[in-house]
Image 1 (tube, chains in turn orange, yellow):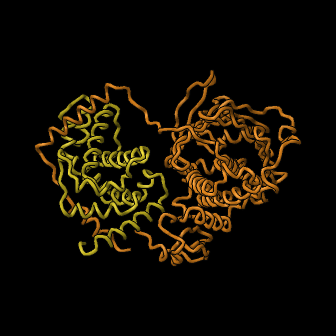
Image 2 (image 1 turned 60 degrees about the horizontal axis):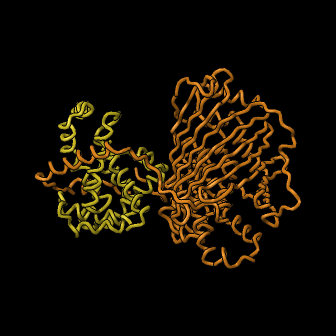
Image 3 (image 1 turned 180 degrees about the vertical axis):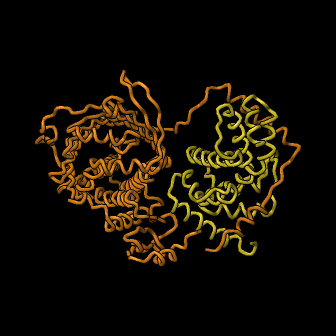
Length: 436
Length: 178
């Protein structure tokens, strides 16, 4: 690339002049405004949150998809947090066969068709050492009466994930392949992997304090690497029982563009006694499946990434600008919501086959979320990935849309026309023409 | 050193210290706000807001870097909040209003752009906002392409690409003047 010095020079030469006579007047205004704002109660920033969420089936599925992917990638699991005594903490967790905790989560911001959301979710999570997991979540929204309850079972031995929605008398099964199971197990349960990741984060000690009578030591990280840089700004805190070396409470705040998420994990119970039947989903006879066949969760690989990109273009007309999970889900839901509204499917065509509709939605959403998850995985595995969807269009056949390292000197490249090729590092440098 | 002294004085309520900071940096910040928003009126409001907030939080200010860069970062954040507020209120998009203030000079406008700055600001407003932000931070605050992503909440490669594409586009827009 040509040096940017000429532009820098141009910036330097571009000047403005200010009216000195007005300086005092302006300065007075500032002082006055500052005094004025000091008199009033400081207004903390809170988005103009409306009251619309979860009425739209698409949003429900989108949220479900986020939860599923998050579960697979360990987003909601506290294990990836920081701490100087972390190795000890993880060792202790490894010794625990079954544990339980609660998570209170709120999501707010601007998501669907510029309609703000304000979503509260309370989840009870039961994890067993042999990788089975059960999550019971209750979602509520200020404008919607009642709560939406979901039960989600991760069943690696059966290579499946089952979601039950008692309110709707529905259930959904998702099949997972071996690779996905392996990834899930690695993400959630391999302490060595977790320690390695945590130690890569910069963290600070919060000192010793007391939570509900228990002496705890706190740790905090705001290192974006915590979520492989894929979830925007993060602020993670964890408090560990000084005596037992087990977590007592954890907080996670994330800011992803216009979306804010805050989660608190609490009420940890270690070595709880549970019946194996707890992990067995019970689907009452009068419940119907959301899809005629189990949904297949796509593998997080190149093929899924290309399919996800292709679908995203079909829906929105362009590639996603960035591949962070929440934004990509939000844009997809928005586009799909518009599409459905255009087809007047929501109100008029009540006879439409719900199974077909859900199938179509999930078939589109899954590869797109799989794309984000694949990229997240590349970042986590330090495959030197880069993504240029903000600048590359489907017409740019020779431009690098996405790339990642596959060997010492080779990169896999997905071009603007979605063709993939392996190129040497030198060729990639030429293709990207990165600034020095 | 002077800045540290000024902050120390400001914490003790010195109006003169704030005035000195204002005199020292307001033109730089105004220029940054102009190239990011394209409009002098908006830029003036943003700079006033930056100093107002700065004065309000002076007592708990803890600076690790330079005061200039702190104020530049505040300006960038204020522009971002301003855009967010505009979108939320469903009024005109800031990008759309960017070109207007130059023509519609407000009676109380207190700054005048050089012709070169007018051209630069017009060229900048034709870039996507994120590219404008990267270029401004790089050119005016000398911020590195590793530091900028922390502010934007994005990856280094995205910031690099935004910079590269932005510079190329600016070069073509300002063709003949460089």
